[in-house]
Image (cartoon, rainbow, N blue to C red; front, side):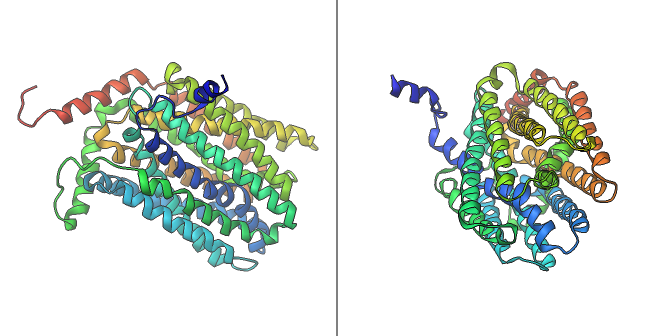
Length: 445
């Protein structure tokens, strides 16, 4: 009976390619060290409180670094995506960006008081590489999944990422408590984050395979022309993917809020008095709820639809952002209320991430996977450019309350726009494009 129970809990049970799905999910687990320790939790506080001599200016600079690096990713993503599809370079670009990002992450251990320029340069470059790698990782989803289990596979990868985050947080909390690491000594954890990232991507290096490109695109010197032609072709035929375009518009708007939380969660928690171990424990709670949300999404998403899960997640986000606004406006709110609101952040992150990625996967023809996921990544990063910069500058110069009002509005507008998306019609358009691509040239329709 126990063995049967374990079999039922196995997330890879019934898959035709469990090793490939596991290797793909391990990359999600690996790069959690950058997402969690560097972007969200420890490094933003370290940058504001230790590296910079002026906390308010540090917040403004942090938002500029985040939005600026994302803007660069926005500029190159569609071209790199088209090149990856045309040349069959998705795997090599995934590994190259990951290895370099891991090395730069470890390099953040060399930062300290007064090293503002060094820290800014290392973080900027590492974030560009990490974000590009996320695009290439997402583009493997249609290859490791089928149209019938894409929601389950997407959520499994997301859940593996949160499982890795849990382990990271336990190790971080243990190290801080055991060695008495106050924020001035967190640099050792940045080195650990880089090593974790590098080791975790080994299964992807060894196991992941990608489909060969459909045709020889020509010499390397013609790659830029290839990218321009493919992007131009995507835009010219956008009317065939109207619901993908509608969803990416909605995703762009609510992505303002999601990206803001990712870049400012640690700073916001620190503003509420969470420091050292308590800050890590708060992130641990957030990660547990995010993991639960990912598991629940994996169990029901293919039955109820990815669009429905996006709408549910946005409802959670709206309630959470409104709760944070209320806490900011209250004169002396009890600490337990912020712990409660943190659960909303976790459920929102766990649900919105996998359901959004799954919906893009449902709307994507397999022959355009890297290209369309490049557009998805570009949209998400562009949302970060706008959202992170707007929130950070408002918080630094106008105060917390106006920034929280804007955060709530991002999610409300995103929900309204998502209501215009028809999931069934979007899937039909993608399958029709796949049939057209498979039809030999010259054959009459």
